Image (cartoon, rainbow, N blue to C red; front, top):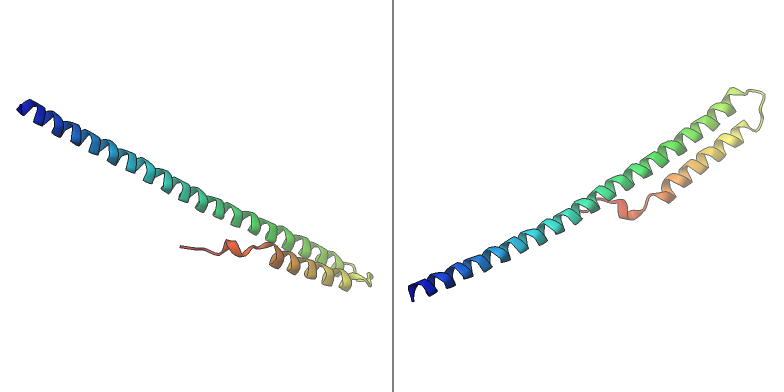
Length: 102
């Protein structure tokens, strides 16, 4: 009779341990998904910063070449066009979902 009581208690403890282990696994998966989402957001930000840097470099290059040639009358138009394109690219490509949310 006592043996059956102990067996039931051990079985109950074993079921509780399995339940807790399953909860830990589910929590671990949820945390992994959140970490993946944060990593993806950081990578997306890096891509947008690289795009902005490339746009800025292209604008500077165009402005440098238009300033370097003093005989070129269309130089100021080129630099204005480059600056306008740069500003348009910077402000049109950064999505609002990039804002940090805690």
